[in-house]
Length: 205
Image 1 (cartoon, rainbow, N blue to C red):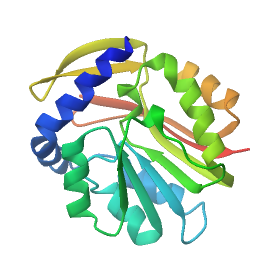
Image 2: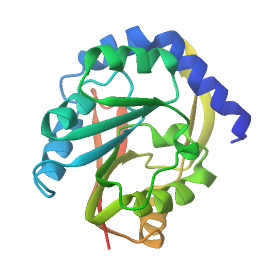
Image 3: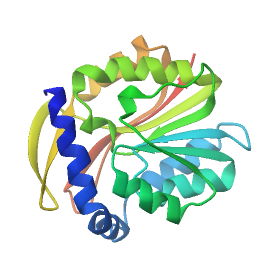
Image 4: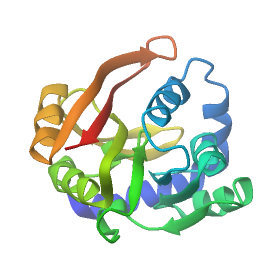
């Protein structure tokens, strides 16, 4: 996947920010809140959290802001605008997640719901290493990752969208190499069999 294609992700979500949020809200069996509740029960009561690819801030950044201090990051200006309105108690940053810089041990929890497969897969390992550096000892990384080898641009809600991911076993190896212990590792399918991701909760070792 050529890095120049990240402009497709930004432009795409700028265009579909509102219909995307409407579509997401209609998916009753989305497992993200269940995994978020699971990881929140493993960490400090008032966590400092980073939500990568936060979108419009709901539902996940809103939950994180209720539990502690939350920072949301998204590439799309339209999504960031919505997020600021939806979750006024959180901090939001417009940025490519691969360009972020934070001091070491800044967060208790880093989450990434469906966002990392929009990043070129050859950059996933480096991102995992950086996330491990941002986490405090005992911190957790919760992510929905791609589960198969794919590197394509395809239609998504009427706009071209990048999907770039490795298979589940390669994801595990990259997380281990980044210094994580993988505690939860589940490939889950929902939305009438149309959506599948690898869900991982990884602890900083």
